[in-house]
Amino acid sequence: MNDSKLPGEGFGNSQDFDDELRELLEGAESAHTGQLAVIATQALTAEVLTSLAALGGVQVEAIGTRTGAVAWLRLPETEADEFDALLGEERPIPPEADKLARELSKVFPFGVVLILSWLTEGYEDQGISGQVLAQRYVKGKPDAAVPGGLLLNQLDPVVEGLVTGAIEPNECADYIPPQRISPVDAIKHLGKYLHK
Image 1 (cartoon, rainbow, N blue to C red):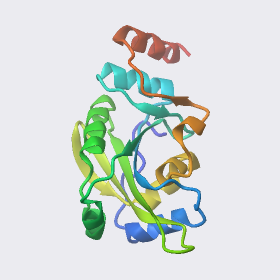
Image 2: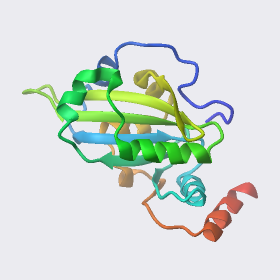
Image 3: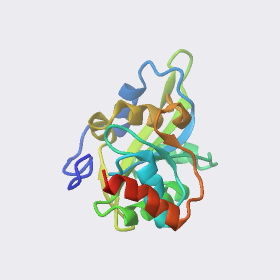
């Protein structure tokens, strides 16, 4: 991942988010339904992401990809989900995902991108359907919205799999579950990469 630019920067409006997700989910009958959040970062590996997050006082479920490590979060469903689905790209961001994105954006100088999906079983043989949206966060605050489909096209296909629920985090080679890491251990882990 480019150190000076986070995926999603510089994009204008694209096709409707629902259309983008429909294309991504085509043939993804095995995907799990529910709300999922993936936060794209500039971290080189899951261990680097976990260590940097720990220094910022945050625990994450981390997955390393070819385009940078991501944090993954399964969100609880709420009674407002059905109504919120009518709001399209104006749909409110779940507080758990918003909080994690804000905290991680304080750790990374160029911010992070939160990618959210709401997945449901389609009617009859339609498979999985739903919505996806993406939002940049910089220095602890929400920044510009990002076209979700275009963003996912820039990232490792593993990220798309995580967002659509086709891949579970623990199926990935570079995966670290949420865990407490002391600041000393976090610095030791980061030191290994600084001396490479």
